[in-house]
Length: 363
Ligand code: OSB
Ligand code: MG
View 1: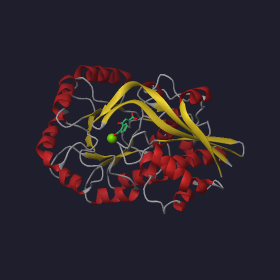
View 2: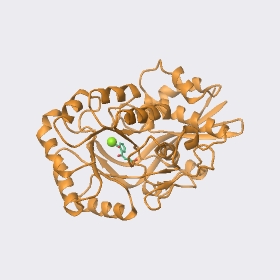
View 3: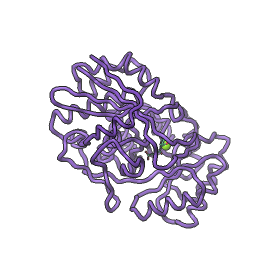
View 4: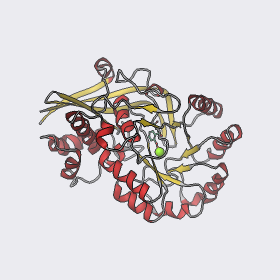
């Protein structure tokens, strides 16, 4: 059996700035499996640099080639695959890339769309948008466009020292839109007064205000501010999600399949959120059309109750890796449940064009 990989470097339509830096390109790893007349693709959401998490493309390729790829032999069910690699600590993005590849393969084998294969789904995703840090007038322009397009929630990136200026300018113009702010871990508990001052903006939640590996101080913070806390970086597994709810560290979770080792854990986390009267939504990592299809299938699940960062493809790249992008109509993104697996139609010319390195695993 053969699995190919392609490291792609995709120029973003617009630079994307978070509290940890500015991206002009997205470098991700695409996997392709072809067996028994079925072709499956997946995307590893690690990037060139370890700035969002400790994983990067080099660590992901190392873990995949040395430890994970052999467990894909015999094409196990995704859950079985995950169990067989549980002896490897962490490296969830690397695990997720193969777990999702197996999901696409098995959904296709069962002649079901991935959304149906995952279980109860509503057939569409409810998108919000994540807007990077920029000059205030640029951010307001982007928000204006997004509101007109029908996005169901606007999330803006914030950074220590810029938060009040950004949020006040937005609320002055849009007092009522559903608004959230993502700090990507830029604050510490010492910033408590500053964080309290954000309560006045009536945010649906503040995303990951404190350190990426912290639960305890998020729990302390949640008792000091009225804005609900949503965790992203801190929730790396269903076990951590359980603990987060148990100690009140958050009431909302941004689920990114890549961060939590794939769709099996994603669904478990969404269920935990619902059982704890919390909320769950599907985040994004600026995926190409390949990874995006997995996020959409998950976002269509009935356990997901808040709008996600699942924008249609056209927002990210002027040329994508798929020929059938998702589009947004009246604030929803429909999923074609008649197409098997992820349903994507990969544009092999575009894949070739943006590939900077490639190879094969023979297993
Ligand atoms: O924190 O949610 C985040 C993008 C890259 C890394 C981290 C994050 C993001 C986003 C963009 O917010 C979400 C998207 O539109 O894909
Ligand atoms: Mg985030």
